[in-house]
Image (cartoon, rainbow, N blue to C red; front, side, top):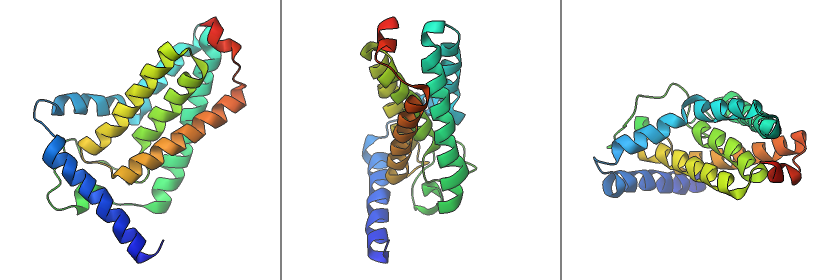
Amino acid sequence: MDFLTQLDHNFIDVNVLLFIQEYLRFEWMTPIWKFITWLGDAGWFWIALSVILLIPKRTRKIGAAALISLLIGALITNVALKNLVARTRPYEVIDGLILLVDPQHDFSFPSGHSCASFAAAMVYYKMFPKKYGVPAVILATLIALSRLYVGVHYPSDVAAGILIGILAAWIACRIVGEKKDVKKEV
């Protein structure tokens, strides 16, 4: 990426975060967004839900696919790309950006919360009936957006995390052998 492309990219990322802070942050909403972002911490919510899905035989394949997708996403995002790219968190470099949660201890790109959320949610969307899959995707979207609201990620971090999560879900469904008849069983 040449310097001008990188400059324009950062300009958009920075201005989106400052716009959110200036016009979309409200004191009454902050605890809600903090709670939503907490649901994505270390992927615990998605891991717990997927482990629970391993228990009933009829949802075991879905739970396994979700756990595989979470593992694939974590390897790509947290083990490889975060350390390769080593992008500084936005609150560390954007003047005036106020951090709403504790400082993070890893790099910014890509968003692990977004990746994990979409890795699991897209498996659920693909393998469950829509009445279960759609709420999972909505929650994943809220978790991804929460990362912008609390000031810990750039929009491009979140977008990359979402794409990696979708890719991880696709791979996991292929590994487990997602079948249309699984949806009818639930």
